[in-house]
Each structure stands twice: as C-alpha cells, then as structure tokens.
Amino acid sequence: VQLQASGGGLVQAGGSLRLSCLASGGTASRYAMGWFRQSPGMEREFVAAIMWVGGTKYYSDSVKGRFTISRDSAKTTMFLQMNSLKPEDAAIYFCAASSARDVILYPRSLRKYKFWGQGTLVTVSS
Image (tube, rainbow, N blue to C red):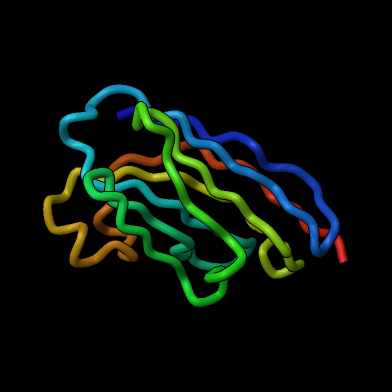
C-alpha cells in the first residue's frame, strides 16, 4: 500500500484545513486508515481513524467535534477536515493504513498501522 498525504499549510487559529491521503495498491488487505500527528519532541499520536468496511470512525478526545475523517466512495482517498484549528494542532500529520484484522479492536494504536505516508505539515498561528 502506498500513501500520499497532502493539504497541509499555514492557517490562523480558528481556521480550517482539509488533508487528503491518496492510497494505492493492496486494497484487499486494507482494513482501516487513520491520521496521526507528531509535534517536535513529542511522540506520534492518534488523531482519527476510519474502518474501510462499514466506515466506523474514531477520534481522539482532543479533536472530537472539530475534525472529521471521511473517505471517497471509490475508497481510494481519505480526508481529514480540520475546523476550529488551535495552535496545539500544529504538527506533521501522517496518514496510515492497517492490514491488521484486529484493528477494529485497537483503532488508535500506532502498532496496528503498517503502512505510512510521508506526512504533511500543518502550522497554526495564534
């Protein structure tokens, strides 16, 4: 599975951005996709995930109500609509795909995601 993230940029606090993640290859073995983020000096953390079959969505508490994860009908692209952005949302955002059958039990676990995109930088000015 190859993943390509895009859509990052500079936005003022309170603004919005929409990230995209184009996925190719290995569609049959993709059970979930997710977004993670990493700030300088911090560990990579879970943001949101979507089950590829059924479409169940999961969010971290810090973004719930502000971010929305979705996928297109062709199931080739995943999106993250980020609204009401805060300075603490600034990070490199990575998209990831999981081929683990039990990812539905652990959708927030980095260990369940084998395939990673290159990351896209989100900067939020206060």
